[in-house]
Amino acid sequence: MATVEPKAVHGMLVLGEETPFLSHLPMFMFPHDVQALLEVTFDNATHDAHRIYLEDRRTTGTDVYTLSPERFRLSDLAGAGGQPGLISFTGTLFRGHFERGGTEIVDPVTVTVRRLVHFRRFDRHAERPPALTYVAFGKGRELFLAHLINLPPDFDQAIAVRQFRTVSGVPLTDELLATGPRLKIVGRDDRAGDRLREGEQVAARFLDGGSDGVDLRFSMGREFYEEEGELAAVHAVHAH
Image (cartoon, rainbow, N blue to C red; front, side, top):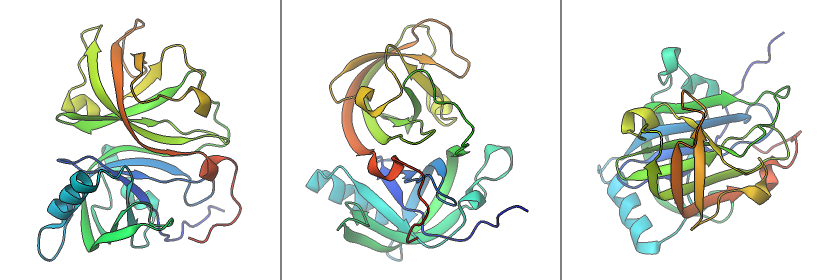
């Protein structure tokens, strides 16, 4: 008999300035065992939620911004044909981690999901990738990489790309980034100790329709988030 997914609080990391993105903060326990990346917009009663967020991020220089949403089912995000199912929900926007002393900056905020970039429930029978693997996403001048999470022990990471160039002629257009292409980092094992670091120069290959050669060269930018503790093992109980 299938387990009915309960509604729960699914905390989200907030990335991006001109175009906000949400990255679900997962755990290896149901119903939090999902990696999801969403392109969103923010609104509130005075229609200045995005401005407040943007000015706060630029003024304080804080890396971590999070969203504590109302209770909902993660599976409701995944609609048919890769389109978002649940398209709007409310929550509270925090500077810092909402469970670790963060400061409220917009409450309530209405989140509208414009695009479901990546959605994948963890498979305990999956195999760990042989190489360090990331999901690319972003829009315009902002490009991010999120580590592809698979099996415990694992790690969550979101890091910006400062510069990139293509070798195979396949550019990272907005249209391609909207699909969340997976990239394999050349010469790195899939473990936290080999993760991407600020200022590094790295080579990557497309795993989704790319060539067999080195497709991209990256200059890594700012690391916005890195978490290992919540993904160290399978969790049996969680307060959410």
